[in-house]
Amino acid sequence: MDPIQQILAVNTGSSSIKFSLYVLCGETEKLFLNGSLTRIGYDGGLFSVFDADGAALVKENISLPDHESACEHLFSWLLSRQELPKPAAIGHRIVHGGVEYDAPVVVTPKLVADLEKLCPFAPEHLPQALNALRHSGQLFSDIPQVACFDTAFHRSMPLVAQTYSLPASVRLQGVQRYGFHGLSYEFIVSELNALSGAMDAESRVIIAHLGHGASMAAVRDGKSLDTTMGFSPAGGMVMSTRSGDLDPGVIFFLFQQGSMSADDIKDMVNRRSGLLGLSGKSDDMRDLLGAAASGDRASHMAVDLFCYQARKHLGALVAVLGGLDILVFTGGIGGHSPDIRARICDGLGFLGIGIDDRENRDGRQVISSGNSRVVVRVMKTDEEVMIARQTRRVLNDKL
Image (cartoon, rainbow, N blue to C red; front, side, top):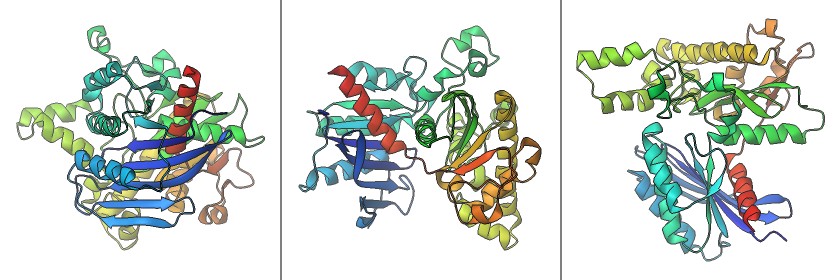
């Protein structure tokens, strides 16, 4: 009998908090409810809660000036609902585990202190996650909490893939390539393993997690060999509001011009660049596709650059793997935009990638064409259920 019967999974992002409450049934996790607080720090905040069937329990427009107010609203709501089963444990997505944390662990004062030191590694994510962790720890002080690290999945990368060509004195401070979206990648790998005949140990897999944050990972034998993000979640591909990779000379130039401070540059790279910076209109791919179709040149460039960089990174990861057997699209854009999937795959026939237009438009699970050597899949990711699974495993191992 599993001693942990209910788990609350908390997924804290840079401007959102997603949460799911699971009731454990044997080896499976049964969703009881889920929800989110969105646009934290922006106008138009929304608090939403849905039951297991997708019916809305709460849809509330709310002002969320910061993560402090968002956490207070979420955990106060959870405590006020007497009909909800009380969680027996809480699992948290922690974006960065640094060099030391390569597996989920029970939250302790030492862990919190260590994560506070890591905040400069992921300043748009770690302080927010720590805020959620402290709030839940105060309000649910009698139940264990577990930290689940987004970087952990990529610790299997070869040393050469983790290393920057910087002096040893800098690298010893923990400056290296970490990679992110690990909980999403681990979930997709587990789903592929559950599909009979979909993947074996020799399968060469690229997973494209394309959403507000976007990255890709090269996977073999269920392990990460390389990924597009590096030291922080701001690196790699063009994203909704993040720049992706930049020549360091750009930062030097802005400093030398004296027009921007370090905080200004951090804000620009994380919140005012990417699709938003390119289009000048929106960070939402749906808006940009519509505007581009209506002739807006800036939106057209934003979409083009996103797809161009995705193809370029995909090609690099194919080289790392020495070929490709499976390509998986997931995330808000990857899972829901047939236009973007088609544009990324266009012209990649030389890699054995071909998609069926009708299957792609219909959002089928397999969208590769009959003559494609590569199986192209569309899969829904679920970071929250992976948080619940890791939390359950860690706590059961301690018994």
